[in-house]
Image (cartoon, rainbow, N blue to C red; front, side, top):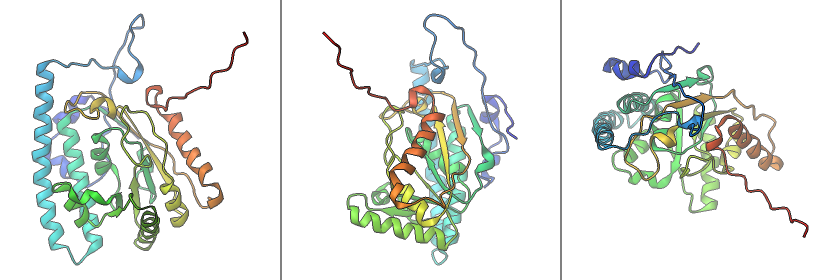
Length: 308
């Protein structure tokens, strides 16, 4: 099912191909990197040569500026489309997804990271899609790879993000107030009603915030509540390598290889409120199983007292 090609294929593809609204590309891109065993061998998640020289940094800056300008153009174009479609909320949502497919795919092409996509057969299921979050690249990838008819959920402050935040609201995506627990619970109930009524999918980051070092953080319980209220399956999306490609607090995008892996849907029909913590742990453990060691949570082992 998955076809592979070298990273150069992705960078040299014709620009017009990015205006295909399909969220999943016709060609998965993978890489092959050799390594020699021995002293000083790099871990498997870092099998590329980091180049922090001035030329690498300059190229990275050029790519980031190109991304920003390109995103401004597509955001402006789709903002005009959204304004025309104000009376039709679902059409605005659909156009928001198409904007994400075009813009996300274009941004990843500009950045040029070699990629591999696995489990694409699970990407068109109506479901609650969840994803680990350790880099701005995660947002670009989710914009590109989630199916049409998927609504996002974010903190209410996103409206203040220049251009992108306003387009997010125009696209009829959902916001919650995290600062007020009571309001957040009510917002979750409204989200569940909205996705059931309009037969939508949902995408969210269950950690609630971005990991600083790429290691998986504890999951919030919101995605479980939404699953129980909507009876939708959960499709985990496991991202690896994005934290190496664009590290938190850095403006240097490195050519680290990335993997996007869709896992089989998890049925939630029999989930119950008295086992919420068990459901959260089960899904969290699935991520731990599929993430490489450097992205797994650190386990702090209790010291056993020694006998004197």
